[in-house]
Length: 227
Image (cartoon, rainbow, N blue to C red):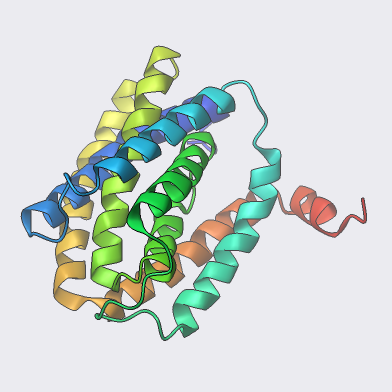
């Protein structure tokens, strides 16, 4: 959308519309298949919604330049972890945080990030579920989609109030998202760790490449600047 001449705020806002279709379809599939209980996720959903709403309000008055420079490095690091880690499996492991503490900290933080900027949110949620709650890859992906849908919905609401959503473009993209996300969720349920590892690594690398190549000179200057 940026390459098509859409303003950054309208691009973010319209992206939340089409992303809500995809994350909603995937979340619905996982819920219907019994991988997620929305009632048990209510604290995380509430915190994520709050964080995303705050992020969306901030992005309408602030500059996202710092995140544009930082996020590609984080995503590359995550891609390396997803590619090499033995913690990605079809079995749950030991949790490092309680669910309430996890919900408050990471629901607010990642929710705020998604409302403020967005790229890689699903990877951030998935990694947090795997590392800190010990979820297996299917379970982590399923729960990530529910929170990603929550943050998309919160952002969409506040972008709509600000009048920034291009509804025609977003709805057309959303229809394609419905199909792709439903198929993707079913593939995760069937294939498990092997597919999730490939998708997490590839999407993290692709998003990083897009963010860097969008303005490589500016990125490199700030990355290696001593100041």
